[in-house]
Image 1 (cartoon, helix red, strand yellow):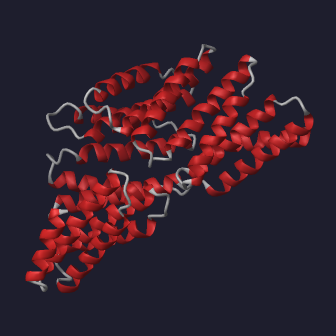
Image 2 (spheres, one colour; image 1 turned 180 degrees about the horizontal axis):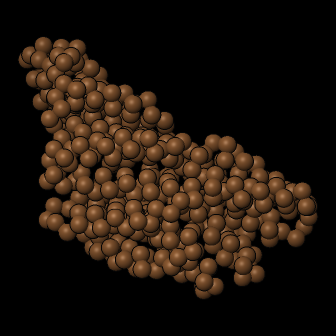
Image 3 (cartoon, rainbow, N blue to C red; image 1 turned 90 degrees about the horizontal axis):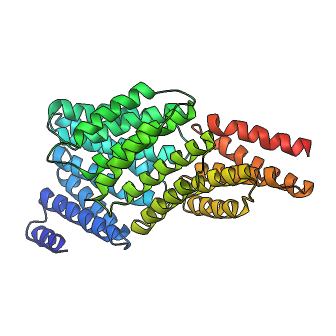
Length: 402
């Protein structure tokens, strides 16, 4: 708050100083971020920051530093809106345009390219969650990060961001039936090097653990043993948690690792209970640490989906897992975080209920609900079609046969 007061005093002394308004915008953005991190409403602070930056540009419309600060303030505001379940796309595109204007006027600042990459990265994340193709935005993020590193190779926290984007592009390929194993292995090598130096950004470890989860899943879906990557991922996770035990994203990625481990156990005909229990433990801890990351409920629903498959295969009623999984999916859907993935999982759980149901009428109703949810998903999500189209076909056949 002190920084905001100092900026306001400076403006009173010199109301025609563009830098004064820009400094006020930066201070208000920092205040908003502090409010957000403590679970308070930050909308007013972020909105006031935008207004302050606009006043600065009214006075100095061609100053690249002021253009950049405005664009960065919009980016942070957009991230906040996205975490609330609102659509941040408009703000992110506006943010990118102002940062690009700053680059056009002064292309020699690597931080401008880095923040442009962050902007495109967040946009891709929203598109991914909401069924749109994120790969063009991911490619733009990759190019911006690469440009920043070319200008400043020692820009250490850009490297994990760059390789995380490459990993996400590869994972998108996995979801559409591709096999990007060589790319994912390269990403692992690059990210491992970023966690060896003295200056280690916490997202470097998160990106590395996430990549272990991605490559483990890729190995699994291509009928290869993922155990090596699962074990390395667990070791990396435990190492990171010794110093970053309150970083929610690490716990979330731990849940993803253990979900793959449970699926691999099912595929081998081995007990999977402990893996799914561990996955839920990690995911609930992630939600405890960051209740705003409600997209994690989709990951919770995925655990229940595979545990329900496991129970049904053992001849045990999957109904409890189905109920808990649908409830978790509903939380993700209601908060507009990963809604189509959550709806697909909800439809899959209805399909498992139909498989388990002996009563013809109830089986038909469950199959209908499954088909409706899966059909809506596939109409709205590009990346989920390869995985869930066969399940939609199964649900429709069950309706017809019944």
